[in-house]
Every structure is written in structure tokens, then in C-alpha cells.
Picture (cartoon, rainbow, N blue to C red):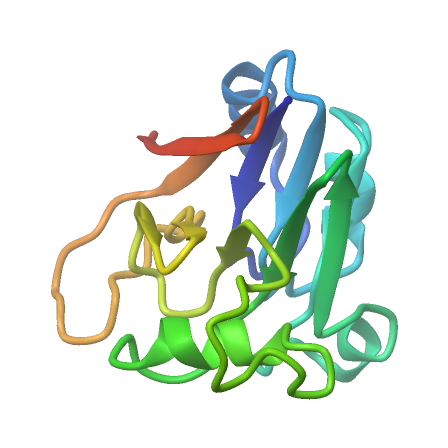
Length: 175
């Protein structure tokens, strides 16, 4: 399976932005928006390209927050993917995000594997694709090109996430 991933939109996409996404996401099985969305019209626009799932974030306006989940777990066979906007600074963020998907703390503080095998998240705008602690962490960066905290320069990015068998991989695409 191939997933098109994005985060950090602030409102409806322009015709030029949607055309560029249609090129980058051509042939994807699903689009994942890791928030903030900015406007529910964005999800409708993404669904013209492929089935889409989206989560809201703390920076989203009330209509978006009341119509979207804070986090979702999507299942693909025996693999589970977490989708969440993310919060806070990059330090300690991965551990915080994983804790959000622990079922009633049942696996917290144990050696049990995490309940998800991949996690797509946004919010801090720091693009990354790397495994850690049994989970593949994927942040597509900023669709709008906003720089991560503490950095002055950034470019617009989205990502492609791959599930091949039980293996997750991904890469960030600048445009």
C-alpha cells in the first residue's frame, strides 16, 4: 500500500496546490492528513484524489476540531497505523505520541510491543521518516512550507509512506 501524507494546511487548497498534490500522490491508495487542517473543505478536496483520513489539531478552528478526531488508528491486515497531529516541542514528542495510543495504559511500562507499527504525525513541521522503538515515525513536514521551531528556512513538503508486507518505509517530497 502507498499513502500520500501531508500536514499543516491552513484552508482550502488552491487549484495549483491541488494539481501538484494530484501529481505527487498519483496512484496512492489513501491520503492521510496529520493536521492541522484549517478548514474541512481540505478533506473534501483530498477525497477527489483518493480516500482520505484526517485528524484535527490544537491550532484548528472549532468547526474542524468538533468534526474530526484527535487521533485515529487505521488497520491494514495485521498492521496498525496511528494518525495524530502531535503537540509540543520535538524533544520527547515520540514517547508522548506513543503513549496516546496505549490502550488504558496496558502496555505502558512493559516490554510489550506498541499497539501501532507506524505513526503519521504533524504539528511540529519537522519532516522525518525513521523507525524507533518498534514504530515507524513519519512526519511529512509542512505543506505550507513553515519552518520547524528554531529554524529560519523551510520548503513545502509532503510525504509518501509505504507498507510492504509488514515493513513500513517512507520519504519526504519537497515541492
